[in-house]
Image (cartoon, helix red, strand yellow):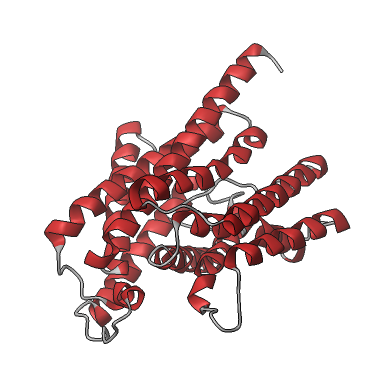
Length: 318
């Protein structure tokens, strides 16, 4: 490896870790304000701000966004999975620590490897299947399920990982004809459109008959505290855009085979944010489960590299 490549990879690592740090800030803000805002109000505001920033970037750089997609059905499935996947993730932040939520989210490479087998016809050997199984054991350790206390809401980050894996597998499949700007634009269009539909149906809070804070977050009336919530929503949109820029820059200037491994730094940032902002310290099983999930993810990555397959470690696109 030349000195120039080493320098570029160092810059890439800096950008990806910075991007993951900003993602942890965004998720911390959601956890901080969820009692003052409705779930899809938050989603709408964040996406609207990101859309404005993306459009400004496209206009300034004189790039072209082509709205026509060559895969309309798959694009619809992709954006639906992405929208509801991260809705599950935001819901989980209302009752889980940042560390636990982030550890469970990183089960997505296991799902992506399985989808690559069944939908993209990739070959997966016994060693990768073993890594997937071990990874899910790590998920169970983090969840610590018991028949007496188990709450299906605890599966929300895993549901997010499943939806995200579906979305990214489709992204991989359709990227031969639909570029990143087309794919991102449709994500934003659908998120804004779906949020508006949800507002028209339930934005007045008529379904909010719950005392549970998580259920209130889902069904709360929109715009009940705009002065208190929307400054944070604005910051979230800006922070998320910075995160996208950092991730995109990292993969543009450095080797994806190196950069992708540092995506797991998000778990560390989430633990730090949880401790600094909410004074939460992960329980030992979260550390153990997270270590198993990361280890299994690393192994899957290296097996993909050996086989020349890069499915389960594609760039996050939140």
